Image 1 (cartoon, rainbow, N blue to C red):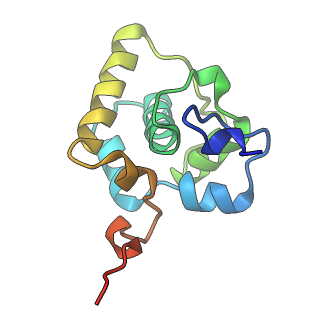
Image 2 (image 1 turned 90 degrees about the vertical axis):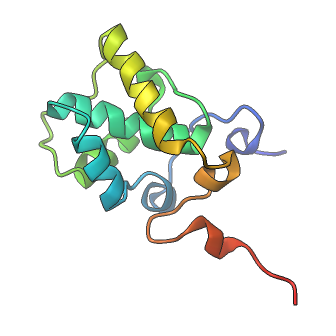
Length: 131
């Protein structure tokens, strides 16, 4: 049977592997710089980065409570934030603005392109040409 994270309605798996954390949930330097430029404090920075990486993986914005703690901890570490910075539910206007930021960042990319992004690897390098 196909795992739920590979279906049309993906969710976070019960277990998130170290490989998946490294390949899918590690923000690139450009993503970190982008997120820092759009937030004013560390809590919002963490929330925006978690939503960006979650949206890239799932194709939708999950509820904050549905994001596994290991994913949050991994992204927090990649952002070099203190352990005291927790993922908090943002005010409705802030959350709406964050969703717009993420959609705008990924605009112009086909869904399969940004879902296949991996740190240090361009999605176009995964395509093959036929001679």
